[in-house]
Image 1 (cartoon, rainbow, N blue to C red):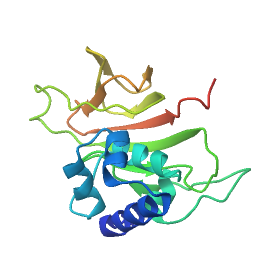
Image 2: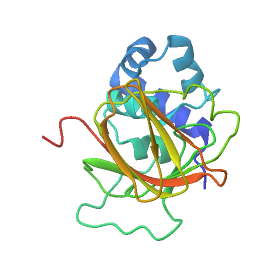
Image 3: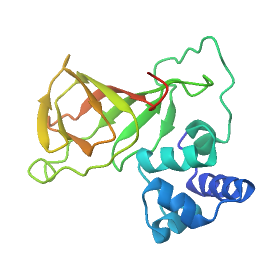
Length: 192
């Protein structure tokens, strides 16, 4: 079940107010304009994972709690059966499943990603974003084009890439059937 944007917006507003932050403080931390932030907090727009992650970080809550309203509670082991990951919006068109949503105090965010093929995007510049930390992507099916810090890397099944996600990066599927891959996002400061 896809999280409801209006419920996420309400959690963001409530947590911001409880923390005593002004909207501009959260917007600055997330790297978005105040107008964009108001759209997010009022449920008028959805944002990629990188921005939501930064909002959750500023508010001192887990991204899963921000998106679902449920605080992760398992501390030793969690099992996610095929297709049962928590759906997340990170980027338009891409489908994400969080594979460790119930595990508290995670040092990584493992995601199963389905990237659709869009012939119109193959020859255009790739949309870029940043988030603190590092990321590991492993291609399962199809082909993926990664733009990272000014260079482009094409990946196929079995290929992987590990990179500084604080530098601009983005990806698109380049195979007509789309691409599936595992993305492991590591938060800065927890892996030293």
